[in-house]
Image (cartoon, rainbow, N blue to C red; front, side, top):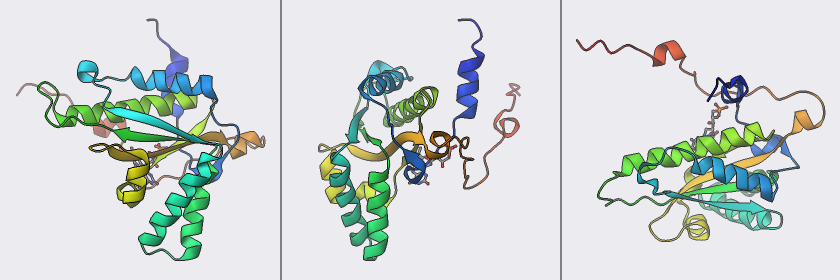
Length: 200
Ligand SMILES: Cc1cc2nc3c(=O)[nH]c(=O)nc-3n(C[C@H](O)[C@H](O)[C@H](O)COP(=O)(O)O)c2cc1C
């Protein structure tokens, strides 16, 4: 394949954007298919596909918001805090729920390799969404372990990884350019990441 600067630029420019900054439209059916295909192109030892994707959109957002509210109340938040969590849950036009299904006893592929495949699929999905012009963010939090949410999204033995909020960057939609990403923590540099192994 010849050098593809557009692809590289896409990978280098993706930034996460949370639900409160997202507006309609979110990805439609055909675009969701592309996101799933991109996820499936990620490295995956023995092609186990150790994950599932569930799309929450339209009226289902309200049902998910209610579950978020309940989880927040159970976690000790007051009514206003829980209502805010619910509001954030329903804010994204489309949410893709990422569910891992790790085969702990697989004879060839250890669990950590399956988890890497889950993460690689997530990264491909986010990058494909970016390439299609959407913004989004992967979110988790303690609520991934709340029984009602786990029951809503997982079969026995599966793990609720979290929610990928997807939509259109509100500022891009209003013609005011894209939103600068707010970063928590300090991102490592490529120079810090790379080191020669000399064999010594
Ligand atoms: C599995 C997973 C769960 C995450 N959960 C949260 C979360 O609950 N809240 C949050 O602010 N960021 C969370 N993040 C991080 C954001 O999705 C995002 O990667 C981070 O803010 C860095 O932004 P960037 O993608 O623009 O580099 C999570 C990331 C991953 C991979």
